[in-house]
Amino acid sequence: MHDKTAVECYAPIFKEHSLPEAVGLSIVYYLLIAVMLPFYWVPSVLCLIKRFHFFIRYCLRGNENPNIPL
Image (tube, rainbow, N blue to C red; front, side, top):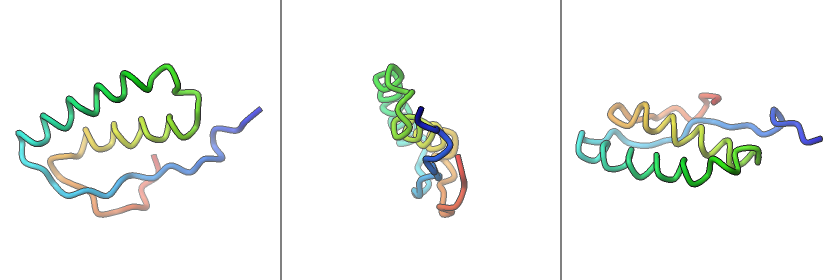
């Protein structure tokens, strides 16, 4: 069986966004997450979902640290 912990997943790097940009991008990312949910058991898809959640959570602040494990 494939080990899910073998895939390393780190936070994306992105600039801070204004409130209108953050709202628009959050809507797009939530829609993408909804489409990908049936495939969450694939490690790379699960990592992408985690990265999208991280982006939604911190899009107003941005992130410059690529070493944050998700």
